[in-house]
Image (cartoon, rainbow, N blue to C red; front, side, top):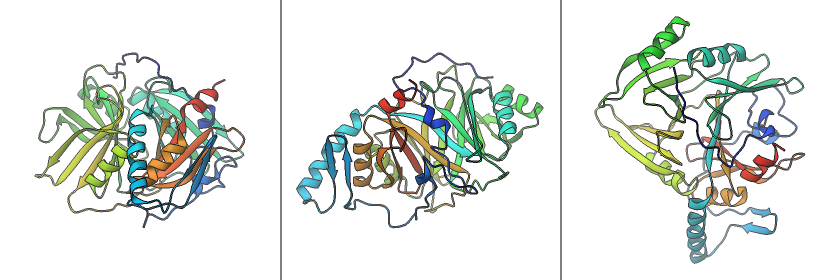
Length: 353
């Protein structure tokens, strides 16, 4: 199955607020009292480009104001933010999505994919349950947050979400195990098109696809989240400037009419990365209601929100503390409407105390 090399613990640790509905979008029940903003629908048009904002964000001892700035001032602000974003301590924390039978999904992930159930919490008054699974502790690994909403047994995954990637040492043996457990195999083990890496594709009980990639031992087996985008260069520019990610590699496949870009905060063999895929001629996708978002740690949610707006994104939850627990977050959409929640690193630690 999957062999894991211990990873040095990072400064970011799991937060108890993530066990609640913090990153849940419930389509059938009332939103959490704490996190009602996450259930707000946001139109996906007229969001993007370097538009001036009229918002004023107050963060502790400073005020961030945008809108109607002179061109020279705007350029200086962009340059300052670019430098800050590069230095910000960021890490991909987890990915959130919805499933129709939590116990069934946990059983599949632990028995077939070798994940561990890290924690589970039921919130009956909000009518949902969360489960966190992965290959190591949340303070040093990228993990999965599953959300089960009472009474909802299926979701529309849509065409925009692609797959998750898992690195394994023997793809063929992993596929055999999955077949023995009754799992669905979409692509048998074999070299990737145009390359030599052995891969396979499998599907979980809810229809989420996983790409199995044959690699040596790695500290981060849960290694990819693939999303489809309508303009790859626009997305690369946004994730570099607003999110501080690096373009790790880019590959065009004209024979199959698609291009991919791998973005992240570290090398692919040791970190989870974002795989952006552009299919020739396709500019937008149906996102369905199953996949939710990625969470990323940051040292400053206020400056993060400012960078997101200046570099072409849409802030959907203005930066600031959450009522009742004072953990600072901000939520945003990228140019294609994919959602990300940024969480203050220090507050993330305090939630453990």
